[in-house]
Structure formats: C-alpha cells, structure tokens
Length: 366
Image 1 (cartoon, rainbow, N blue to C red):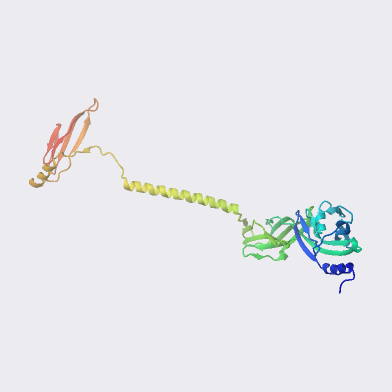
Image 2: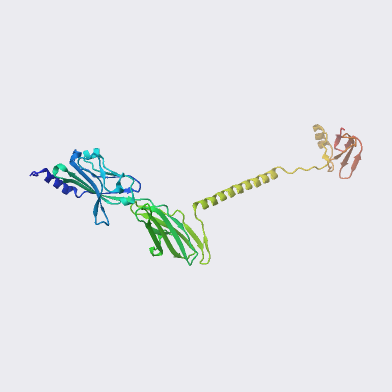
C-alpha cells in the first residue's frame, strides 16, 4: 500500500528520526561539530528549507532558545542567542546535500547542553522532516594538584588545590605507604566556579599524628577518565612532640646521588695513589751515600782461577777501602790511603801504588 501523500511519508519518516540521539564530548576552548544529517541521499533547495538549532534553557520554564537558524529565502544563517554569535554556523553548501550539522567554535562550559536540530520543508506545508538531539559534554583538564602542610596542631592538616577543570571533580586522599584511600570523612572539599566557568577545588584532610605519614592527593575527572595525583608527596617522621619533614622530592634525591658519586670517585683516586706508592717503594729501594767507595781488584780472569786452584785457602779477607782526599788547591788527588785487613793484619800505605797479600794491585790515578 502506497502512502496517499508525500506528507504522510515524511511524517512516518519523522517518527523514525525522532529517536535519533547522539552524545558528543569536547574540551573547553576547542571546536566541535554537532551532526544532523538527513538519512537518505537527496538534494535540497535552500529556498524550500527551514532549519533550526535550539536548546532548552534550564531555569526558564524549559523555554527553547535558538542558537542559529536558516529561513527560506535567506542567503545566510542567523543567530538567536548572543552567546553563540560568531561561534555557531551552518554550511549552506552542506545543507544542499542534506547535511544540517552545527559547527561550534571555542567551546565553553556553558555549552554543555542538549541541542536539537529541526528541519522543515516549505513545500510540504512546513512539515518536519528531520529532528536530531545532540547532547554536548564539556570537559577541561585540572591542574596538577599541589599538597601543602602539615600544621603544628594536635592533628596533621594537609591542603590540596587544583584549578580550571570541568566538570565537577572527585577528590581522594591516598596513603602512599600502602596505596590505600583515606576515609572521606577525614577530608573537607570546597569546589567553586571561577570567572571562566571552570571549577577550582580545595581539599583539606586532617589525620592524627603518627611516627610516619606519607600522603598524596588525587583529582578525578570522570568525563575524561583521568586521575591526577600530586607529584610531590608530603612525608613526615617523628613523634607527637617532634615532627621532622623528610623531603622525597626527586630533585633532593638527585642531589644526594651526585654527592655520593663524587665521593666514590675521590675514594677510588686515593686508593690508586696509595697502591702506586706502595709498589714504588717495594720495587725501588731508597738510595743513600755511604762515603767511601768499594775498590774492585784488577785481577785477570785466568790469574784469579789459578789462585783459586794453587794457593791455599786464605783467611777471610775484608774488601779494601780507599779513602780519597782532595787538596785545598782544587780537585787533584793528593793522597791515597789503602787499608788492607784480614783476620790478623792491617797494613796502611801512603803510596799511589799498593798491594795486599793475595788480593792483587790497586791503581789509583790522580
């Protein structure tokens, strides 16, 4: 059975399209497109179309506020709400192809609304041929939470702050020792809207004094599925009467590591120096001047061997010592004294040529 008129067909089509709903997420300050597309491939005459984008104003009896619109016979779209002036637009070329999407620039927190797209055809007695509902969710990243404290009261008081986020955050305090979440009854949160329409949060937690406290603050953005945990952890050790702060910031630990590295290098250098000195003393004995020099006998090798075979074994003989005395006039040897000693006899001489029994001759030249 065929529909009796195009209007009835469009009404049935509208009944199907009325259920079309979308959800879109956008960051504050970004641009977003809210889709509203005719389901069938078709071309449209702009003079035959009425297109509206509108929102329901909460707190005003659900009165619809027009964001932007296109009327039959107009060459451009117009704006109804000043909040969307110069920020919301429709593409005329796209509407000819059945794409009635809204382009929204510089998203603000106030744009978190349910937008309705309505399209009517003049030739069909202003019958609605398309309606799409698009819910826009707006989000903004919170700043990294900063923890300060504690106070010097009977209880330890820590304060966590984070700013310029959207939507309203969830705040958790974490015991970094075992990564457990502190009881929410211990904290007091203050969330407020700033001039930009974004949220600022201040959270205060109070816990009893313990010998060791290590806490952190976590800010949760539900829409972005994002958790920001304070980078600086507050650590305190001590007793109820004496609490000492333990810095655990990465910069402090880095400085300590640098100091330890320098000390280790110096220790290695000292050990190497000590080892080198010990080896030098063990291999190079100290030299000293002994005064008189040991005289060496001028014996031929054959004569020495003959004396060893023919002569009877002599008594132990000490090596002759030669003392050299310089003349007062500068350098020439004047006197040579040779001492020849054995077990029973010492023979001094005053000559430049002397001999000792069984030892041979010594020649001293001046």
